[in-house]
Image 1 (spheres, rainbow, N blue to C red):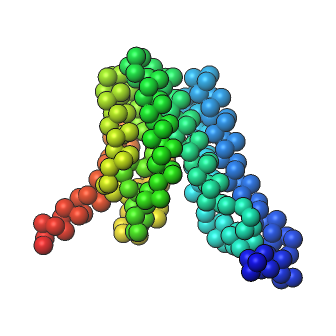
Image 2 (image 1 turned 90 degrees about the vertical axis):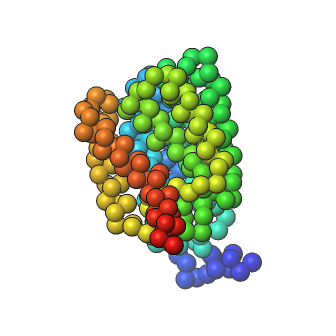
Length: 244
């Protein structure tokens, strides 16, 4: 009742409520981008698919700060931004990339459909896991970033047997209790992480603009940044343990 009274308070104007709801519309736009990405994937326009998934990633990066600034939780209490965000994240991070990985010929053909099902199921379970993030905002296990995994499969184009094995490993790692750096929310070395994310974004745009036909320097740069995100936390913990 308190929440309803605060929403209906005279100090809350219809314009403020409309502005708050517009953030939910902005978040839901990511689902629309996911549909366009899927349509491009069906046409095997892979670079265009990743471009639309990238647009959805930008929406995902911006909607949280917008929601906090416009006090969406208080002004629109009947709409769960958290649930909406998880729904959109699932289709953009997991479902569309699962289709791309399965349908692109990157995997061994006898296993492709089964591994696609594994990606979808493990991703769904991950987004339902209340332990997906640690207290210091690290991801727990492989964080269901199948859009990124798919990007690297298209970039490196390993033999189908290696791609299939790598997919199995990532599915298993979804459920293991190790930590992966959140590129935005982890405070430690945030300046370095954000700088590397900016470099990654530039290299990613170059890669898509050239339809994945890029040279070794771009590939090495993208892979080095991925290693930093995945392994930096483990390396720091190892150094600390050696010092003690």
